[in-house]
Length: 441
Image (cartoon, rainbow, N blue to C red; front, side, top):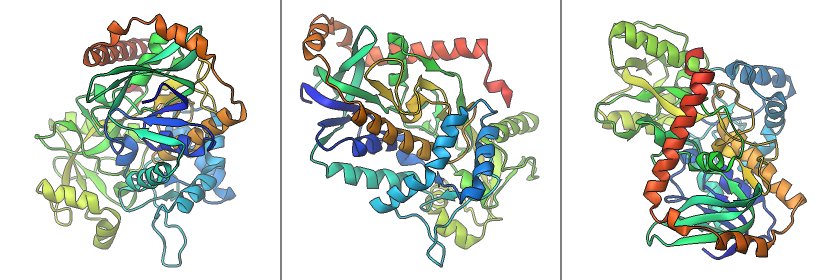
């Protein structure tokens, strides 16, 4: 990395990439990531992205989002997201995102748990991969943006509640470096790496949130953690769990107990379905329940869910003739670094977008397929906010702050990252003790 950039973006998911894409072309931008650029949770998203189905759908969509979030959502953020959903979708189509189409050429939509109607656009069962890939292709062509992989953020450079850049480590060489920036954007994902069973990549472990806690930047609802009801159960699973998209249930798949009897309404919000599964597992004395995909037409399974069909086949299950074993796993983080509708945190020149932030859209429980939309929209708004209000940092002040750093504290990145994990775990436990989240379902 160079010594100075106009903007540094930490993370190559849809939030980080869309932020970089919408920054002015005369600004030098670095987009860094801890691993390879495709190892983001955005890349793994299966289901789809919500899109308002005409103005007559607004009240219904708003009510669905608020109901799923236990009415703890920020209504202004929800309204902003819904009102801009069509524009975001159109921008993705302009980038070449290949959403499924009906025979007449109109966008196909599906339904997932918590939605009162179909409003989710999708690309097979790998919508996140399709969107992230198109964004990366576009960003990679920008002459003002450098995508820098295998680079770990160890801290922000801050003084008197103002951010001047970040401290990074080159994963290959271990070289430490202070990098100055006029603005820093945290788009580094959620906290799945803290959990033994999660649908997230293991390297995504909440570093950005922990660093903000360390520096006194406001963090909200840190114990608001969503478990996805259906991940493929296998005794050999180590690390990331394979998600069985909520869209499968939206198209008719049903949950069965150990005696293969249906035991719940599969289209309730995720936390409700998850609670029902755990209750049934306890009643049955089992390690999983069953998900029966056979009610979904075979053609629909093969065309809409090819990755799921293939993964199940690899694990020895033929979804066309038998149910598959599923179990909940940690999936999404509704809490995070407090940010407003333009991505601003409580620290000057520091923004947070995507799963790293908490702007109130999701409330206490995220409605299915709102995550990609929320991440894309508020990352774009952050970029536009920086452009409207752009100013330079005081480089002399930044150099003075950097010069006073004890770089020895960053000499062992693995140890430091483990300290961040423990800091997060402690904060989550304290928040849960004060205001329980997991029991509310």
